[in-house]
Length: 112
Length: 114
Image (cartoon, rainbow over all chains, first blue to last red; front, side, top):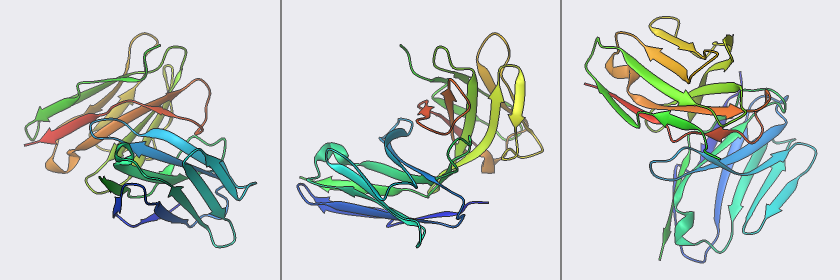
């Protein structure tokens, strides 16, 4: 089955700086890569996703890049704000399938 | 339009007791997925159900765990004779069609086994 590894496990950044979270996956058949944000006491919420037919996708201050050859993808958050503090999960799957394989999560803390 | 509703938010059980976790999908959604999140780990797929049918339970332990999604009412994840290792956060998600895209997750049930 798919194995997703995520690094780092914790990340502390100064407000206004950028944050980068990296994930690798094992199954070359995976072609759908969503990112979820989980705030304290809440369920994961989708913040951005990318399919393997594109290498990069942006949505305001967040962006995701994908390197299919190396089987890794990354989340970039620019101009971080305190409300960006949360646990972020990457996931990998085959588009149209119903299972998601999640990484272990990154706890991001934005220091004011 | 209410999101995915899970209850209870917190559930405390002693070893050997039964735990029942409920999940009401979003309106119009007939596909439900249960995931388990152990401490310091990501979410792990447990089971996928459609109304009245279990489609895939490959991620669910064979013993003590069962799930249902009746024609009327919420989906239920049932854990019999709980053990300490069952302590985790249990999340459900729902969708209108079978998909992994843009899943909507509930806030989860935190199960603590004493």
